[in-house]
Image 1 (cartoon, rainbow, N blue to C red):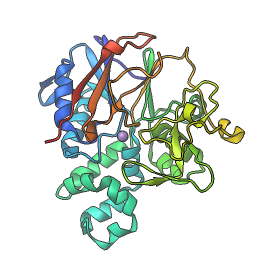
Image 2: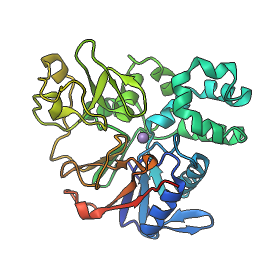
Image 3: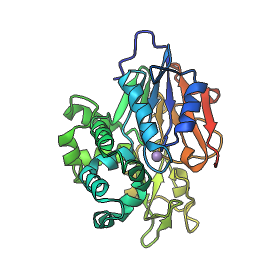
Length: 325
Ligand SMILES: [Mn+2]
């Protein structure tokens, strides 16, 4: 549960930053946050970051300092993103790569991770102790947050898994034993971290694959966690890349339908990032808001100003454009 400051009058939930620090500063100023003693804060409001502060962008270090300073000053809250989880999970490997060099032999054993984290590692190549301190911080972040009348998670609110997590754990935070257990994808820790930070997906029919915009080949497509009684792939698909092979009308197999989850329309609003949306920010459902509008891909860094409403209001989105330099 988020512990609000006594004078709190609302929350500003902010989408994936991915090193877009200039846009973040502009957005915070537009939201009324001001720097005091080097920390951005608002007299009556608190920021909530949906995770994915790192990777891809040009100012990852600066973004991390800004966000961590806000969180430590109780001016903001944050949940773990899949990129921060990657950093924690591969902490030892990344430490080796940083000390031996980005083009060392060590780096060649995990090409996918190196591609994903190359920008971040480059920027920390002369700041290894700083990197270590940030990774130690990632290893303490909550997987999800519950505020007064709202919820925040990086990619997917799975009621059942979250209830089970709460039964097993004494807080919403991850910790060393949990991280170690999560390395087995079949373990409870592995399943909950994958589901909450990466969402649900569905396999493409046998033998089919798609190439996503970031160049990775996938045999799965990302799905909504709020679709009601979906019949076709088109009803559940939720990703920037279109379905290949005219699969939009392809019926969902019964076995796949059973894996889908449904966020109830009467539940409190849930905010998340992760999905690389495009266009003008708006609620996906009256209680569902994705705030990732592809800032690092020259889209919009987006926030929602939440004041306790049960039905989200399209007029309460605030964004800044990220321009090509
Ligand atoms: Mn992201």
